[in-house]
Length: 311
Length: 287
Picture 1 (cartoon, chains in turn purple, orange):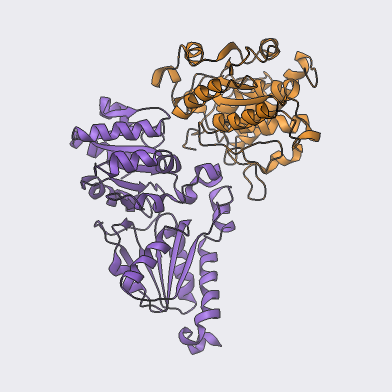
Picture 2 (cartoon, each protein chain N blue to C red):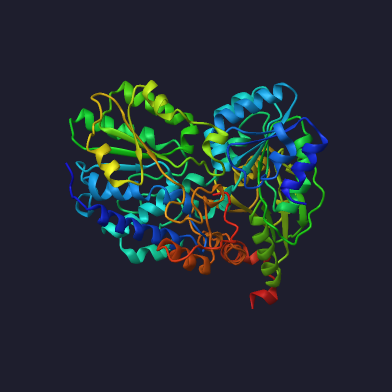
């Protein structure tokens, strides 16, 4: 099922749903015909759209609100914080082309601080599906929740079939004693590639799809911290995203771990087409595996490398 | 006070070449084809004739400034820079390459581009700051900001018009590329803008409305700069989305285009009036 099919189904079944957009229709072209006056396009006006969504929510509606992730999360930030966050209204924010998915657009379109700023709003929940299958499994619960929610829209098709979703729960793909990779969103696909490459090197490696970043699955993080190396992998600034979430959870539970973060540190990424961006920024499976292997060899090798691997 | 004078034929010839460059960039990842074709004549005229801006004074504080707030126009800017010698033509082949900076929105790694854009409604206020400083220093530089008509949805544009008039910035020109489309929709069907001239006048501006593809009209408008003492200058340039390519003109679904190599060849022939093109590429995507 596609995102549009899901929204159509939900919208037809439940008249509380209103689809809104700030003139970003690529994923919802059929909705005007299906939803009639429950499809509202306010034009290129992210702030007005959020205020109007809050008004609709005051009348019992559930607005599913579409805009590009960078403009939705940042241009309308104070409107989201004040009109959705303070009254805890169920605005469901659908953020297109988040993170690396903005590929050649340039820094204006790069939403790589969105997790950070959205999770900073009291009452706001934050989600980042790995692909379209993951997203379609997540959204019915996200939309059914009474809370405001920010979701990184990810329509990438992969062959992976995800587990059912539960708010606040991560999807533990596998467990490993040498390395545990925690990731979310687009990079899940690359983490799977890295996982296989590291396993081929003889390492015991696990992978967790964090998917629900707020509320977050603290138990999954604490268990991952039991491995010899915990890796956080995200297309987001280092500050405020998964790396920060992990640090907060470890501190809260007075636990320590070796942590290797993959993130964008104090810089925007180089714009180009997506595969070239991933290669250039070190976010493709091979580069991820190489960096993890290198880090282990340099920092952790005596403890974790098996004798035959050390040959 | 022009730095150069071109014949209409010369300008038309430059613009034709710029349109060729845009079509060639509309593949292998694509670009905002329809959105930038509407602004070609405007941009060519302004750089060729109106602005005191050339290779030798790109960072001179006494140069004129052009801010491209409608970032989707940037292929027209790349093409114009290549044709007027501000950028090497060979560089256009690097469009979207990780090894260069010619991507979907303007950025200052390209000499001559004054400021990055892509998030709409930002540069009117940036241009105000530059115009304010020029006023403070009693400078003569002209400051232009090109806006899309869809961009006028953003409230920040109207704040800027209020502020520019409050500060009597008659050294500043807002040029509206009035092609009657937002990204996906005709403007008048979604968030109507007309009567647009009246709106700017009501906010205190001096407004001229012209055919944005007619060089005589462009000249006549800009030669009267500043239009009125102490008022923001506004040029509403009526344009056609996709101008020059009948098969994509005035079409909502030809905003961003990523054509096949074969379609690009056909479109180049169409541009030269040889035959029309049958387009099958799925082109309208979120960018």
